[in-house]
Image (cartoon, rainbow, N blue to C red; front, side, top):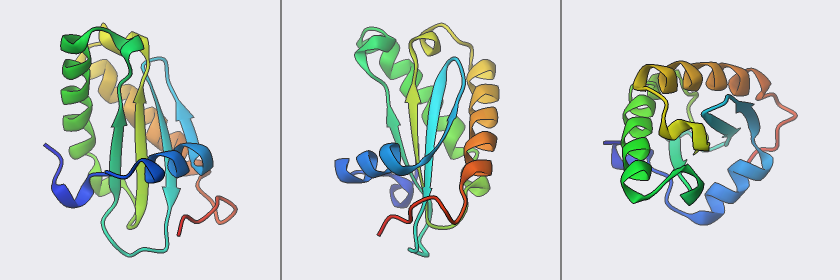
Length: 121
């Protein structure tokens, strides 16, 4: 479970992060990262659509992603916002595959976060 302080709840935060954030993609997932001027803890949101599978499969993917992100919170900069969007292949991917794809996508997205990336108020 993600700690409450790290959960993204407002749809406006999701939209801003996806639209303005640096993107890193892999076959099973896509991550979007923005930085804020807020010195608070990083916030994380998960998007697992119906395209991934039925409710049972979506919940399994969501639980796996939540645990993988929780273990990597210390890698995120202070005030960062992260949205992880599952792709349909995530339904059949193993936990290890999701973890390696998340690591690669995070590396790519965090490498693209620059001062030119819009700062979300």
